[in-house]
Length: 359
Image 1 (spheres, one colour):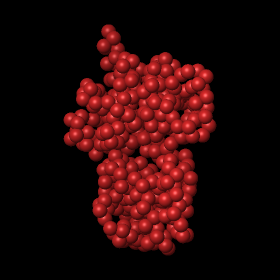
Image 2 (cartoon, helix red, strand yellow):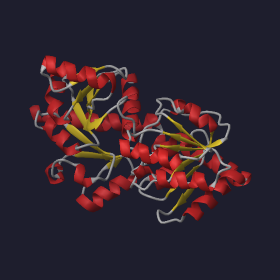
Image 3 (cartoon, one colour):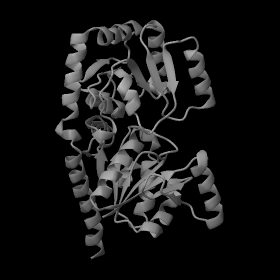
Image 4 (cartoon, helix red, strand yellow):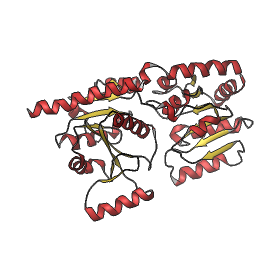
């Protein structure tokens, strides 16, 4: 099959997040099975990709410009739905997978071009659809977690097939030295205020903060002010290879304020037997499962400190959760062979529906 994953959100390397990582690894797995796979994404002005795309758009008058920075075609457009026609002319896809970021507006653009479109739900920001969901009652929906599927069922009456985020364990699994607390994505929605408060309350415990989402100038200034005087916190830039951070990590901290639909960092950590201390919110409960400690969103700082110290100091508790985390990472729902089999079956069904209609 010829498959396009499409989203209005920017893509690697301009932005990194759970949805982008899932798309990248799923694309690699589908390519390995002989499919043709491309990505359509939003575009920012950042870096050489932003500069190159802006120049080529002016010269070519195309709405979407292609690069192969990730090893496969990635089309980028200021407004992804406006780039749909260029993508169709360039690669003649059999089926589209519309994802986060004006997901239904992107889906409509391809549907209006006669392309079967599967809608893969990765968040529960209903106001970000871009089109009325009632217009897509006949579509095939996927969800990245049971939490996401349940929210759409309750709010919109939409039934979804759950395909959890896909992981290539070799990209994450390490022998950890268990030296530091790891906090990824120091953004307000991800609980950076709580992470800083924990570091301040536990000056004897070293922390690594690793950037992920792009921070505004105000957010970066606030982060720097919050970290001022904290000798136990090291801030690292975004990276495409998290293994060096996992090699140092004893605990992964996920104090999210956001209604996460999964929590990719938790699953990545589990492959190395690293327990998670996180918020009991949204799909994080599925991602963390028994492989860590979850606290309610309203928990006080003292409760977070107590939980952190128990994982840091109680070797029996730590070893138990470490072993449970590794076993949990091997559950059938995260078996990538099974996941890709399921995805192929669903995409083939959608692609074949177009052939039936044409006949």
